[in-house]
Image (cartoon, rainbow over all chains, first blue to last red):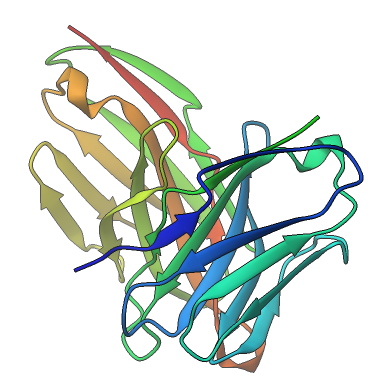
Length: 113
Length: 113
């Protein structure tokens, strides 16, 4: 079966711009979570969506936002990009009724210059 | 606040030299502990789920064990293809009924031929 698909794989943006990343979960998975991964901080939780509703949010500024569509696909948006936003952004999906870990996508590598 | 600490940060082994990675955790209401493997530039890949103290799981050269305060990932006779970063994550019940997941920063394993 198809895995978690994230697009694009790589992005280069300039400070002050905004960016939108996309995630298509495994078919049947209704929960989508987003993580930021950097060498120094490891995996940092951004937010989780379930049935188009944000259920949980990490400690990131309001510049980071997301949404989920009725088909469970999710997008995250980062506005007014800063150099420190350069990271690997990972999307993970999971079943709700039988939570047994995440399936991760390959991530989007964002570089802010 | 839930905490997950992995040690060592990095480990270099000769091919065939067995060793263990440690994941110690502090969490209220542990629901599960997960081990992932992450190769450079890719998303984490699920390895094991452990739910209760005393539980063990095996997969090829890897064996994961769980106590009330820590988990070990034992690697027996490793091969160069086992080189990766190994991540530990704990799942606990968050407020509002959602699953809260906290990741450690990982152990980077290098196996030398």
